Length: 173
Image (cartoon, rainbow, N blue to C red; front, side, top):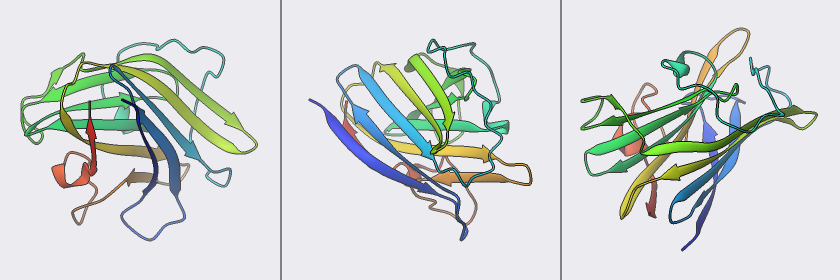
């Protein structure tokens, strides 16, 4: 069964920084596409010709990073993707508790591109989830002057991608 969603990510505060995209859920694959408009001055390094994932690296969220959270009950998985195709995946036993590297979401391909229409990042991910899940789609964008935290929903007064109330898409994997 295929499920498809269009999304729009925004910052917590009033801002013109917006990311649109799409999410497609398949039995063992997730496809996600983040699209940034041409008016964003984003520090967005990329290698557009190579589709294979690069290295597994830590702390990708300290720079421009695209994120996906998949939650089942208290447990959840966080995926971080860099425009340079670096990635990592972590499992948690509770909110910010019990973090370990995971293979719950593994990139099959990562493609970043900059063009006249803006920038985008597309990823195909293998997953091993089964049953109902709550998904959060997020991004950290670094510009020359600031860092922006974008999500489908910001449930608290400060950006917190790990807050379960921000994982608002309900899907069956």
